[in-house]
Amino acid sequence: MRPEWNEAAIRRELARLDARTGLHGAQLPISFSRAKTILGQFSAEGEGSFRFSTVYFHDPTWPVEEALNVIRHEYAHYMEHVLYGKGGHGSTWKKCCSAVGAVPQRCYSSRVARLLQGKHEQERALSGQCDSYRVGDRIEHPRFGAGRIEAIQGESVHRLAVLSFDTGEKKTLGLAWLHQNCRKCL
Image 1: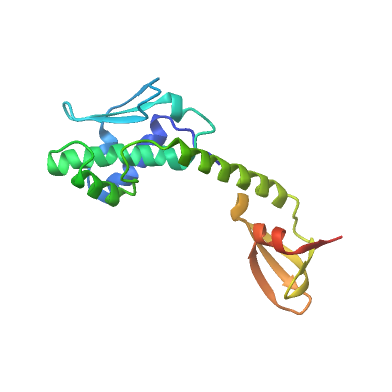
Image 2: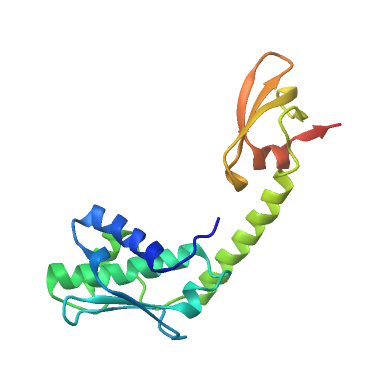
């Protein structure tokens, strides 16, 4: 499920980064703008502050990975300012990116965002196909033969199916893998 990128959600990610770094970025002011060319920004003025673009952060089709990367990118600027007294996209900023899991890249890549959107669309379609499986359904596995689904756990394409085969073996398989590689018996 896609998170809603409001101030509270952004603060949660900043707090997670604070726990990793020992800094206090989650306590800084956060504001929003309608900027189309600046996704996020850290300002070192005063105690520092963050600003994020609602054009992107409120777009339901914008990939979650991109939102997290922007938050981490700006946090790396904050971290660099606190630790080194510097700003910019130089070697110390890249070191900070590495520490917080941001891609050390200066500019946003709409190509990467489109690739991620495509991946999410494929996952949604596969998840919908997996929704047709129920506990009790019989399947034919290419190696283990006929079996029955005893339990389904997890969410979306990450669901697992616990299977009991007629041979007495039990296996736990990814439901997406099962859908793509096994035959559902009627």
